[in-house]
Amino acid sequence: SQQGEEDPQALSIQEGENATMNCSYKTSINNLQWYRQNSGRGLVHLILIRSNEREKHSGRLRVTLDTSKKSSSLLITASRAADTASYFCATDGAGGSEKLVFGKGTKLTVNP
Amino acid sequence: DAGITQSPRHKVTETGTPVTLRCHQTENHRYMYWYRQDPGHGLRLIHYSYGVKDTDKGEVSDGYSVSRSKTEDFLLTLESATSSQTSVYFCATTSLIDPTGELFFGEGSRLTVL
Image 1 (cartoon, rainbow over the protein chains, first blue to last red):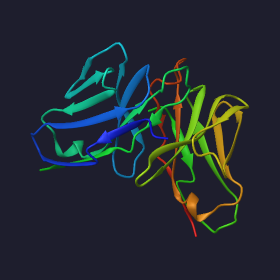
Image 2 (image 1 turned 45 degrees about the vertical axis):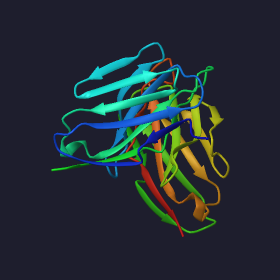
Image 3 (image 1 turned 90 degrees about the vertical axis):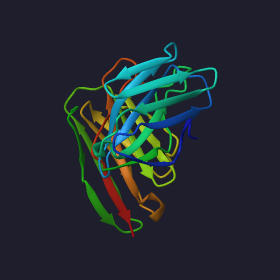
Image 4 (image 1 turned 30 degrees about the horizontal axis):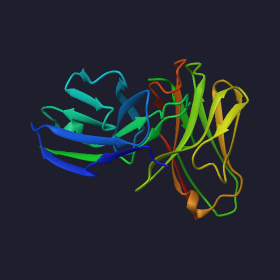
């Protein structure tokens, strides 16, 4: 069963605008990760945020985590056409799990 | 790059035939995973390995088996392929002691079962 669920399923914006994607999950976690997938390619790790962290930055990416609401958001600032991709959150489900569980993803289109 | 190679990258086969997908890594990563990706379902874990000859089932393991006889190779076998196994298959590995750290993915193997 899916642990994380991304919202929206699809997002279309103009270059230069900010893109926000959300992830909700069901059970306690140790960490939450975001991945990007370009069309026809494998997933690439973007950022990992631990359950005791509230916010993390990496370049134009900003991730927040609210464990009380069991949700996370990924913000991409000043988007570029090259940011067009699908974005997935992944959670570890805590409890000593050895596996990550992925959501269904948000498909982001950045129009030039 | 974590040096993960999947083969074949594309395969078309017929229902009832056996299929083996190979994942090869050059980074000496301990944990290896097989996921399948389908529209509307995202990525779902099939099987994973936490060491040579140590494997366990994932969320959608029925109809699949795996083997890991060497650290660098993780094989996924469909003993008798069905049309429902048409999918894109991804191998992933992680180098960290914590298996829920960053995953490195291969480029995928697209399987079509007619």
